[in-house]
Amino acid sequence: MEEQSFLTISGDATFEHVEKRSRFIGCIARVDTEEQAMEFVNFIKAKNWEAKHNAYAYSVNREGISIQRHSDDGEPQGTAGIPVLQAVKNKRLHNVAIVVTRYFGGILLGASGLARAYSKCASSVVEVAGVSKFVLCIPIIFSFDYSYYGSIHRAFEGKGFIVQDPVYDQNVSITYIVPVGKIDPTIKLVTNLTSANFKYKFGAKDYWEV
Image (tube, rainbow, N blue to C red; front, side, top):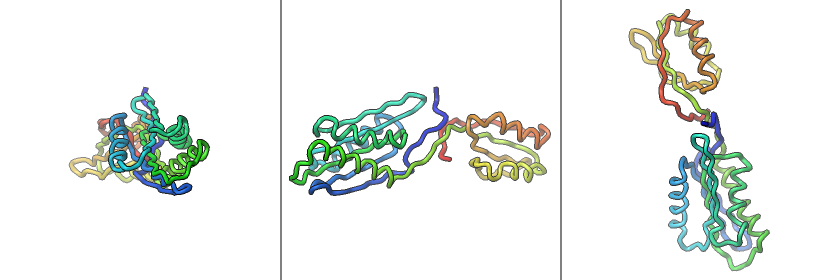
């Protein structure tokens, strides 16, 4: 069953901090599949090939299937991958991948110190990236007489719908990006405003940022 909405990051980001001479670099990216997540992980690893550790975590949710993975990448078990994944879980994020690279500075941090450092870096890079909500929507293309345009425009204005530019021909055609849970009320609204003198068709269902 498809999720009707999910939270993810607003954009890719990086964050860096130093803990007792160890340099931690957090990188986060939007991904839609496990394959994309691992491509990102491998890209960061290749970019930071001199670093001994590139711990990572990702969460992918598509078509109702949630997949979460993490790796300590050589750090003591539970000190890196789990804290990174927890930063994702704390914000209830999906379709994201985080890699935290560590350049060892010569001072041992201990298990608790490592966990805190990885957690701080992962949480901070999430904050830098920002969080956006995506909702499962269907574009509905309405076509109606010009005389109805004003009342329909006013009815939808300020309601939070994504509206694409009108197409002017014999009739006016406007595409509204409608959340799947609001399809019937939306069609009913236009039916009432036009006394059922309109046509409509659906576009492809997808997730849209709202």
